[in-house]
Length: 165
Image 1 (tube, helix red, strand yellow):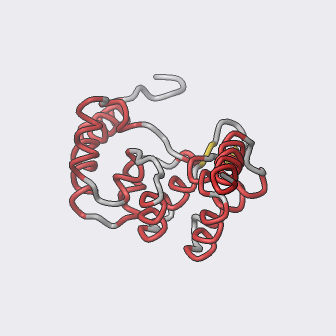
Image 2 (tube, helix red, strand yellow):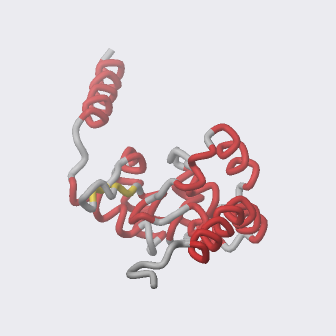
């Protein structure tokens, strides 16, 4: 009977811990370290497992998760660790990791995602370049090519400013 009561107490503590807010300093450190330090990320996630879902507000709508930090930094090792612990895969991480089938499926369903910006305003192509996956980079460049051409034509055919003689 005593053991059963002890288990209920442990489960209650675990349940309460999951509804309490994470200390902001922990979230900031985890996001910051997710750019560069796998061992510290492992330690923080061991102590605060739900922090993998947290996001740090850098200000002005610039939110970044640990996975987002690892993704734009090209840190495959950190991204894979976070995913193994339950982090939610997004299109930016998929692009960095070279998960071309995921990127294609997401873009097919939501074409505007090609132009979405991740943390710090970093685009999808830049995330793919951080991961150095040639197939994903080539696919995204191909999708962006018509827009580059339109931009070049618009720039070349743009009316000149100032007085016309």
